[in-house]
Image 1 (tube, rainbow, N blue to C red):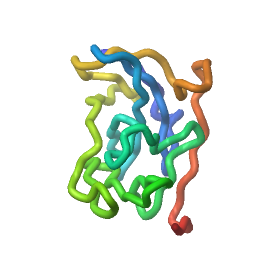
Image 2: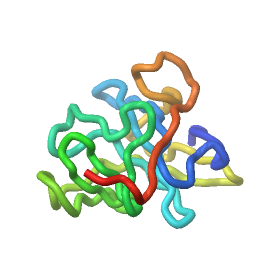
Image 3: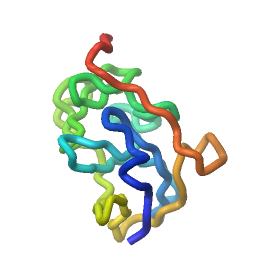
Length: 137
């Protein structure tokens, strides 16, 4: 298992971007915290997979769901299931993570950990986040 971040670094409401590598190359993933549980997903809307849900300053969240700002799709943070929008019924690709002693670890044989932050920022400094229940499309 490879360490991603301390749970203290993860926002209570928002996302944390990190990079992973698989046989196809490097991609971004996002960590989310839902009712104390940590989940990770590939950072791509399932309607148009070239659209990132977190563009480097935190994915938009509304009522505990990740919102695609381009299409208005809603993804459940605990299952990755799209319950509204043009890709309704699809799921975000899962990245397996584990939590031990207050640290989040990549625990997915399909991916290697590359670093934290988006692919665009060129460093390992975690990006910001945004979220809350007051966002409206």
